[in-house]
Image (cartoon, rainbow, N blue to C red):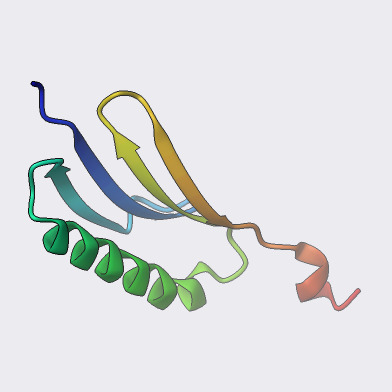
Length: 82
């Protein structure tokens, strides 16, 4: 059986990849994967103030081509006070 991997990354639009937590296989201890997802989410939240109005996303890429994206879309009208 082939191992499946996942790469967890955080991005800010228009910037280089901010954080990558590497590859994890399905046979990794579940606690390790959960801990790294927790760390990735914490890092993502820490990056939010640095986004300064840019869209952000956290991406979970799986080897079988599936991926999950959690994104924060920035609404320019919030900054403009409309």
